[in-house]
Length: 110
Length: 115
Image 1 (cartoon, rainbow over the protein chains, first blue to last red):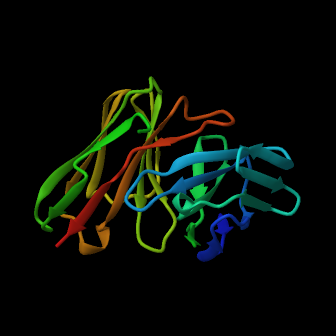
Image 2 (spheres, helix red, strand yellow):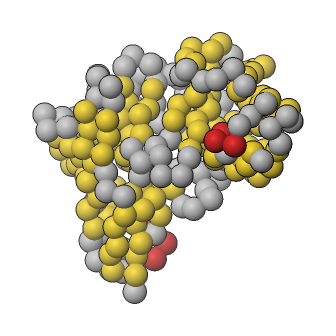
């Protein structure tokens, strides 16, 4: 079966750095996505990792270790608008099947 | 604005009603998806269409019936639903349904409540 784990909730301070972890056990692996979802809105794409290492995109970075079944999303210089749910999703199998974690609800406080 | 629209945004229906959810993508993609998002649970893939052909049915009850008349439009027909079917129904599209880095673009969802 497919299993993806991430913390349910996190709280951080504006201007700080936060790391959201994701671990996975899946049959097949063709890459890992991070999506951001604000309440009542569509999930929007943040990052994609298929090779080990760090991918940096502005204030957001994502890391992957395939041997450990582990990824993290790093958010720097946090802003209030970063308060949202962050979804980890693993792309498995030959088809475009995304298996999602339950999401991490991040709250950014002053 | 992701290029994927869904209507209606909110729907309340009784268990004996028949209703349909509509999704339209303006991105020229070939693959479209229906997901169900319930509180405290991961997004669940329901159906995948590629070039108007259903390529995946993820053990979804027959009270949910998808239709893809062309590559830009996707419907989800609902009949005799149960209260536990209340959820956010998300539509997504991608360039193809196979291949690496096939980012999916999501619509805003339809919030469905079954009474």
